[in-house]
Structures are given as C-alpha cells and as structure tokens.
Image (cartoon, rainbow, N blue to C red; front, side):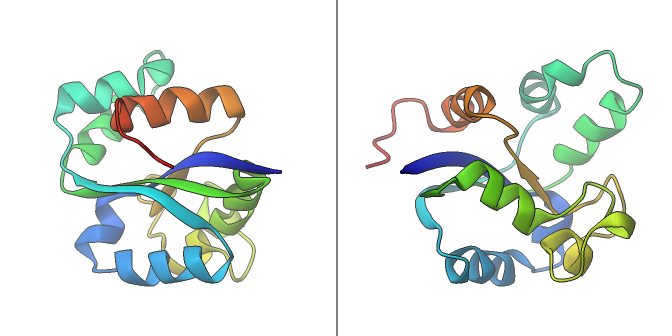
Length: 138
C-alpha cells in the first residue's frame, strides 16, 4: 500500500546545486513525486515549521539556516514511503550515515545535512499541509 511522506532538499544542498542529483536519486529509488515547490522560508515560517523543536538548543541555528536560502519541498509517494525515505536519507549526522545514503554523499555536517523527512504518518500529514494546503496532490 502506498503512502505519502514529506521531504525537503535543504538550502545547503540547493546552494551547492545538488537538487537535481537528489531528485534523480528519489526517482531512481521508485518514489513518485506528488508535489514539488521551490520555497525561500522566512525566519517566521521556519520557526513555525520547526515549532516542535522550539525548546531545543539548536532551534535558533536550525531556523536561521532554513531561512538562509531556497529549499525544495516535496511530497513523495511509495509503498512504505516514510521508512523508505528515511533510509535513503541516512542518519542525521552524516558521519554516522551509511554509505550510499544522501546524507553520507551530500551533507556537510549534522546541521547542514542536505535533506529532511517526516518521521511518522501524523508528522507527514502536518508537514505536507504546512506547504501544500489546498493543493491537489493526486
């Protein structure tokens, strides 16, 4: 059974002109891209999106980074899409990511780690709605 997940190609990867390579990997892994937008988040938008992390020590640097340049936001569909996307991304810390994962290949650091992905169906629904409210993704 197919499910959808939310993904971001973060500003570090877009700035380094890696979006095309990442999109190519997404399609090669069997995902269908149901939605895609290029966005440049304001600090306020980044704070809203990452509100769940507001109390964490990295919140300010994360939201500053996410507002630093354009990012590509995506809705991906595949069987078991959430798990499949998180596996393809690799560990948050690229030093701990498995060979062949996007973060191992493209991330610069734990904070500039090229991609984001939803961690659960409920999170995916909220994150998709944050960027694609009212958009027909069929």
